[in-house]
Length: 415
Image (cartoon, rainbow, N blue to C red; front, top):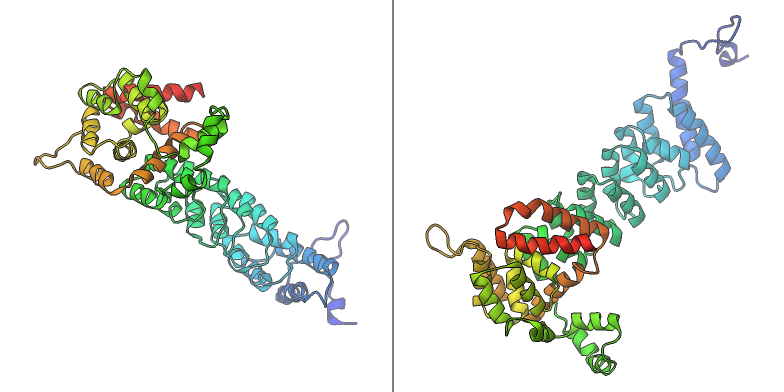
């Protein structure tokens, strides 16, 4: 009889057996047993089938529940490169302490998306951060990470150039940039970011981020204009009856000012309305400027209440207003034109520089994206981000600006 067979596993007493405290030799046997079982799991498919691998994994799981951290780390590192890691074993180790889970979360290329999603849902924020840093991360897993709304995890995800982000994930992150502005520069480097996202994010971006947005997304519509040049006459022959065609062509066409609005306006031109605004900006005048510029009052209100001032330059350039009108609107909103030394105020200088450098066609693209996104192309998350920001900032504005803000708020409430 062997020495192992002769040694009793339990003391013999009446009633249920009680385990004997393991001797050092038993501890060594456990270590050896775990190693051998891990060896079986790591065997190629030609040596062990799926059922045998799964059965072995079940035994390992039972042993790991009582194993020391060092043993769990050793097993995790051993199986990290296995081509087919049994699901139960993978999920147990990935939910384990970070030092155990790290081997699989960082180094295993064979862990399935389902196992990663389970880890994202059940483990800690630091586990999620490691998942967010994985090479080639699937957009399905990224969606789950974004849904937790953890700033550090999202920042890691945005820095991961090899991760794929869905349209919905980008929209969620964009909406969250109002509270996490450090994500904005990272988002602007992502290839998944679209103009509709960028122009919404513009409203709460700083000066540098706004400059990048206008450089990257203020594109010409010349290709579109050439492609659909004959469609304008077709739509006119149909008396512009199709609303979808009319809306798309309004985005593409070269003309920005609304000629039809002139007939209904108390002003003879947009230029006159701006001149009157510089002397007395009221809600009615602000709405007229919006209509004459081919904008909805909601868009006009956003432009007039924007604290940075860049939208004023975009409005004037897109509608063909001369440079002096930027200063007239600046004055209408009671903003300082000079600093304490009598020099041109830095904010106004920045806005005038934008007016001088942006092309008319590109300014029109920006303006029409704003008008479009603030009316019909807005998701609930982005709508809430804009609305919340307006409500928080309303006390910072002057009386004329508040009048425009009231118009904007009313439009939001009607939606």
